[in-house]
Image (cartoon, rainbow, N blue to C red; front, top):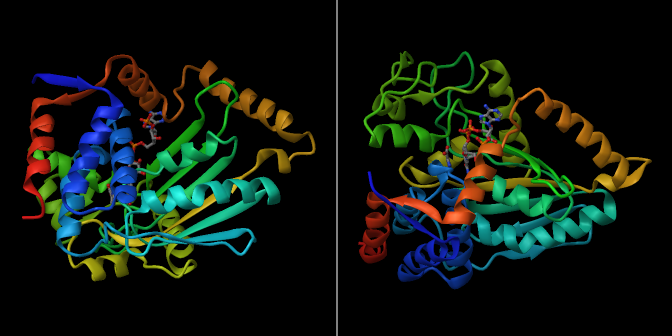
Length: 340
Ligand code: NDP
Ligand code: PYC
């Protein structure tokens, strides 16, 4: 399969134009484009260019407002809110993140609550925005009900991602970003598109029986990672980033959408920690302790999460982002298709 390589800025502008063409405002289109281009740059195919068609379907279905202006509600305390006003999450995060960082530095820890957003992306771009500012971060959100709880047979939980980041002096940060399902929903869809069977243990069919057929899995239920353990974390995310913040759980998000072919509207919870405020030895002691731990892992030859991604980023920064001819043609088609 032949491919083209393009610089990050070029890809980002191509994507932005697709959203401007369908009436998105510049702030929404730009923020969405940057997040998708980062996904492609870091070889996170399930949250890269592939996502654009689903976002356009969501606009077409009237389930997201691509012209919305997020509103910040900051009373000066430890909880900062951004009402995304039915828009996409990246513009809401870009509005709230600097206030979150400032408050975490003041108080040691602060929370950003985003309400009423369509969340379609990986969480690591948000986490890295915090680690870039010297903060540790923890982010989570529901999605829509496509995952059966451990021991159950029918979709109720979301693929509910959770991500954590720790800043490292003069190094890439420590970041993990995981779906609490065995795989992200996007991976199942990519297997279907490519006609590939799923690995065992990813999903159940509509009768609650194990399946490796992506089509049957999309009609049935995905499974949580780590059986009851992943299931418990997914439930925690429903409670903290759904019920607690007064937003939709994954079940409610799916009821609102009526379809899994478009992207869900719900909330998100992002916590930021200023390491220097927690340790009597200040930031230096916390960083030194962390480096001992992380170095010990690397010394065993184990790879840290995000190392694959950072390697892909380094390749893309040196030689451009590789896109297959089909992906490149798809960008042209999506630019021309509009909302028809
Ligand atoms: P993966 O299982 O591919 O990876 C999860 C994490 O584990 C990554 O940080 C990855 O780093 C790391 N990792 C993978 N293999 C290893 C290894 N052998 N050793 C050490 N670390 C490893 O991703 P998921 O399928 O769980 O999730 C994919 C994405 O989907 C996430 O970015 C998530 O935010 C997103 N998502 C978003 C949703 C939403 O509603 N917005 C819903 C569900 C998922 P690396 O990347 O370097 O491989
Ligand atoms: O891949 O599971 C997923 C997903 C759902 C919403 C955004 N990504």
